Length: 214
Image (cartoon, rainbow, N blue to C red; front, side, top):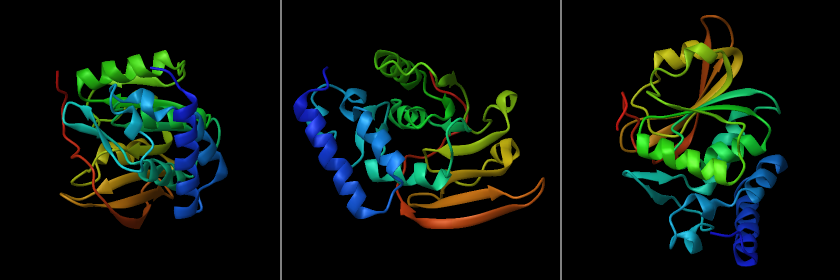
């Protein structure tokens, strides 16, 4: 699949729509403008790629709505070279956006088919800097902690305690919490034992599940 003039034009229109919906940081919109979302989708869905809506990626999962990708990235509030842990690699689209922003990305996926799909997508588009893992998102990656940012791309019933421990002091976790409909929640670690929580609206994500799946 190619990144044609038609795709680039539709991507530009999407970025303009997002800029009118919310005052996102310019570098986030610029990064999303460089990532060909259609190339993370199955052939046939490419003409829907630049609509602001979630789309299926297989294994019962979805690629997040572009507005949601931009908002979660905005809420992280990270800077270039910051270390971020993504829970739920999916097809690799959000991973690519984080990489475009110059973050040091560690990403974990519990479904082996999606882990392999994301590897293929990211390698094909020359995103070689993210470090990918097949594993349980609830456990995180303690070996590589602490993280300045933790981004959860699925709806968690509660905040996993292991992820709280892996958040750097001064760092932020962006996580949708709830069953059915989730509340986008930002948890900022202010000290060894203190966390500050804020809520940022209702969203709908696929559920966050424990363990791994072949």
